[in-house]
Length: 243
Image (tube, rainbow, N blue to C red; front, side):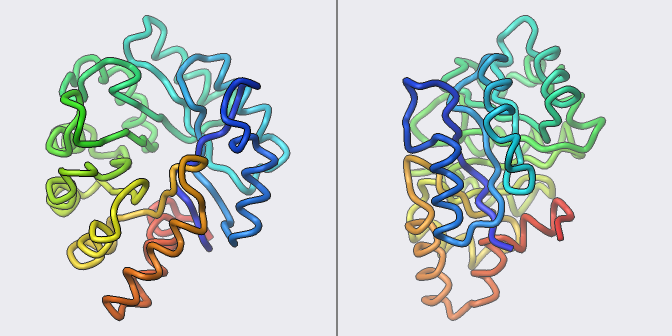
């Protein structure tokens, strides 16, 4: 099973037309992608509802997450609605767009208490140019909420990849994704913690075939065909008990 853990779905005509659900499915089929973790481009309950409507015809292909801004006064209620009414599987956070720090545990607690109680999933944007989020912040979050599977999107690229790998090695419930990461970052993660990384292409900003090729070349350099299988789907399927 090939799984991409980082895909955006358009919920508005003004958004990138490449991310319309029909095109995403077409590109997934062309590249042998069986399932994709998906979320809208932005927060707002109406966008979550629209995405749920868009992906409804493809229940076996998408694993939807709710993109929520924890600064919203009703953030907790939004998450509960998305989980209980829309049947989403977890949460997407973006500290830059939401203008919050990942170090602010008390701001995040109302959301993460829900995820922790239910043993759910969070994908959190993490790139090195933003003071609001750094890989080292994931360590406290992961230890505070040990039942939440936390995916560090972009694994601290472009300058903090080694911090990301160190955190993933230390914290059992923190995983990495390869979206926008360099070829060498994939080499490093396959060398150091090959069981703690998911493939993600950040579609539509990058394409599935580009991401697959990056994983293929890295695994070939390391002479590690098992690493390729792990990163392109086996790790995710193992963690989330998919068949």
